[in-house]
Length: 391
DNA sequence: TACACGTGGTA
DNA sequence: TTACCAAGTGT
Image (tube, rainbow, N blue to C red; front, top):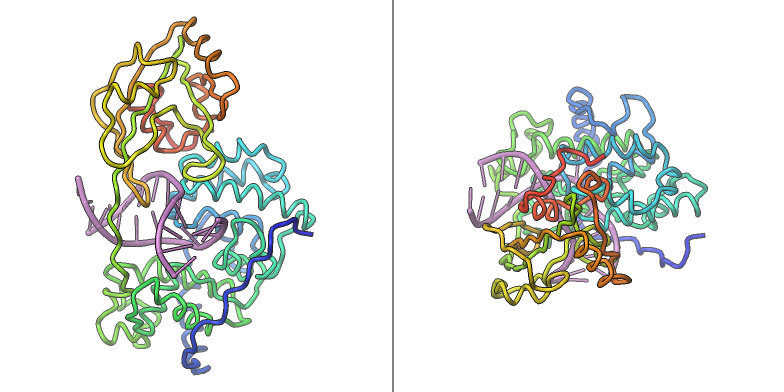
């Protein structure tokens, strides 16, 4: 039985939308599937036509693809599947290795939930993924979209996963001018009307392929669309303006000073961030707090420096890294320590949270630095960012 | 419900 | 360079 975690409630029924004419529904479905059969993209996680998709591979790909481009996820998907061919392998892996191999992909809660989900499948479901949408939804890191996607693609369940592509395609098909995110309930309800027992997995992937290749955010190729002549936005020539979105807020700036401490042999001082929140459980270099408002004064920053304020040199330049909801502008301070100083730092920080430690440059890849940390370290001229995957 | 949560590519 | 965007989930 699932432990502790309360079951996630299903999305309540959306707003009443006019029922779709079954004949039109079937016509649109068949046109899209026909187009898909002739324009199907070859993707690393996609089973060959007629072959059964591996639920583990489908799930792994869907987690990696959340808010992430196909190009970015592809190499990670191959590496994970190669390293952990079955979900029970992933469940048995040390979490720190899973996090390290995820480094660079972003949204690190996904990696923590990925591991927790694999362990739940192994421990609570006999190593097999639940084959229903509701069962999948109760897994950590699996929300309404992913539950529907895995159910349709891996288990032929007649459900329509709604991602950003499907929202856009549906908004245009019905010329829904309500801005996102307010339009989400209506778009979900509209999309759900396409649910059908015939090739539900292919239909789901076809909708996403359509959004990714023709019904694109900008300058959609309506003249090549399998639904040309059926689309309300095309008829009104407003496809390029849909879906509308509420204006986004300002992105505040946070300032920090990072401390790159090097022991003889260029071993780098690193530690593990706290479990939750930004970059949770990932590797970092020591730094001042990341604060809004004024940049750090050098003397002020040095109060946070490992082993005290002496011996540090402020490097020229600023590292800029843009997160979803703020921009980080960081300076970097560098200090080379003697063997005695390095030992003194170990003594001073023994037992501190985050297990402060030294990492040889050749082991940085194994530690798995998030991109922002890799940028800071590279700015100090240490190691440099790993090219591609760190393993 | 609204916000937190990464990163890299594109115009 | 800024702004937007990409197969969303958790709180």
